[in-house]
Length: 448
Image (cartoon, rainbow, N blue to C red):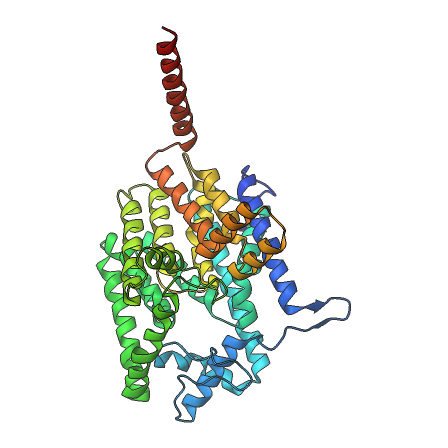
């Protein structure tokens, strides 16, 4: 019996050492996060993960228990968890966690972890199939690394440790983009609508649907989103929905927390609001906090404008989708765990990239995966005993923005270089040549 075509692969196919190096680095960095937080004792088959393991899942499950009892499930943390562990999604979504209430919480946690693992493997398989279709058939080593990246990256760690649903959201995103690419607009819109119903900020993907003029997708996403909100009103009455919009949505913006420049030891957000807060209040100390969100939206719009011009080629479309997802997870105060949403189309770009900027894009990926917290980085820099000036510069950089955000910025720069055919190495050489000619001309004039 012959193997299916998808399984007949060589060990190596293309010479993509750069992509493999980035994935190996990400897997190594992610493994360190797993080892540091789960604290496994391999010889004794034991672990000591601490009190926050499964915190998000316990929050979901507790909210479902309260809903079944007819109580308010917003603003209430499960016993034993800090006050940040509260339910944040539209009311109807709590129904998805009803089945977990019949299970002991640890059993339910591992079940949700298993669902995330299946979603991660499924998304990896979808990316491999996508690359197969575009004539970049991968060898087994690359396939294994892509699967490993989805399961062991530093951004996947948060989903597994806390029991979140980010890999399931990533699966919805990838399904939507691939369906859109295949012309199945209604399926695409439904997938995006489900993702936005649970996490809200994925609704920003609508910018790409508008760019594509995919009206059926927009209609389907709107029906799912609005229908989900109305279903919550029908199931639980108006009060939970009103609380969601008046308290939860407003609190998640956290604009006031950024006033005066976001503190280095505060919540580890990858948002562009962190550097913008330092720029805004550095230039205008009395600026009102309400200016920050519109300013972030303007920066996001500028990024989209760069990549939404001319999307005829596959690479241009992948770069436009990448820019869309970057804006989606960085304009709002989002945690680093949501960066798994960038894996598609970031991984395909590693393999199909044609033209200048590819190496810079890979470098940006390495920087992004070096997922160090700004506070920890500043402490490490100060303890290292560097020269005063160098220490001051590095501390300022670490305070200004997070390391993953610097990596994302590098990748966006690489994408812009590729899109507009710019070669920074050649530009630099031409600039050096012009300076030399100018200096030589001055020296010749003096000698005369």
